[in-house]
Amino acid sequence: MKFQDWEMLNALYATENITQAAKRLFLSQPTLTSRIRSLEDYYGVKLVIRKQRGITFTPEGETLARHARKMLSEQLKIEETLDNMKEQVAGTLRVGVSNFFALNKMPKLLRLFKQQYPNVEFQVVTGWSSEMYRRILNHDVHISFIKGDYSWKDNKELLYEEEICIASPWEFTWDTLPALPRIDYNTDEKMRQIVDSWWYNNYKQQPNINIQVNQVETCKEMIINGLGYAILANLVVRPHPELVTKPLYLPSGEAITRKTWMYYHEDSLQINIVHAFVHFIRTLDMKEL
Figure (tube, rainbow, N blue to C red):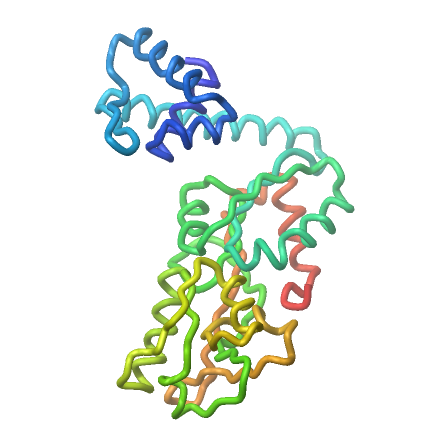
């Protein structure tokens, strides 16, 4: 098998969809289909089965896809080793970033780092913190920026802590909150648990959710335009002092907060680019960035 075959099988295994895999590989769908057939002819086995929506791997195909993933991982390791042998900060840094951090922190952070280390390239993947946690567990990335606490026995460093708050376009009292229009947004399970736990510890009624959006940034725009309130981390709305914000508290009187961490593996510090990046992060006030 060639390197391109490893990439193809890995993309198919990740997406379970020929169209999506072709887009990820910058190939046409017929070209990708032709390459699958060539690989099936070479090994003399069926690798994938088309379904009404997407594909599924045969046992032979799944075995080959796992092998492809292993070979891609080994290829990345040897490239990193060779880059590291040059005794310079160069190569590609692979980073997993939670959605809010990716939008509001990462562009400036990478620009500042690249000013110091111009020979560095970046491979950045974004998504919910639970997904970035899975990626660092699987060594798919060198470093993950994650909101919330996950089980982790390797290295992690606290970047900042922020309060969870009510953000509203108008003044409100706590007793009127269940009747007011609320804007909800898709988020990871840990944030959802924080919000739901606080709500049902304080109210018997369900919240009056009348708008549901995909992203917290869209939710923020809805609040700014007077369409309702939302429960979110206060850094999201800090640039908008015209909004009314009130922090949430536990029954003990302690403010409810959420931490943002940098997760990485100790052994990855042997790679020059990772060591330099971790040291660089330590020099910054990430909350104010």
